[in-house]
Length: 204
Image (cartoon, rainbow, N blue to C red; front, top):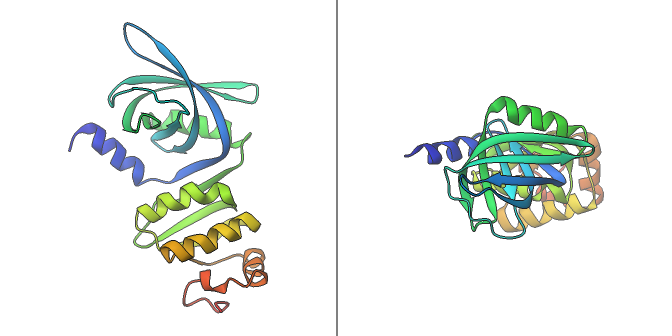
């Protein structure tokens, strides 16, 4: 396994903070000719950043890259290296842990986000609001083997989140557990108790 595979693997095994809205970013890369394209940061993990671009950007893995993210009236500049690329639209950027933490600290104060822990066995934990913005982080957890989502740290759930939950249950048999009372109440009112884990007392 080469270094890039290892970096991508490590990123898959750590908690990710997914942003509920796009954070614009300028992407600077290249040696002789510096190319600048526009994309956005979609998630942040302790050692990496997920980048998406509406148009294809040909950046091979291993390329040094600099991101300049605009958050409110602040600009956060981060240097890193492309660890993975998917269809020239999605990139995993390996960065220093302290740079990722600094970026997260700045972004967290301006943008609503959802954090999902890497699955341990068949369980993963979600922190933050359970809404449609949780779709990508939960699907990431499902790809990692999650069958249950622990909602002990979830703050609330809205109608979009309830619909998402039902869809994930029907498609992937995903269930939830350890719901705070306010979320449990919403699930009961929506009469979708089947999304609860089998040992949940509120399962219909």
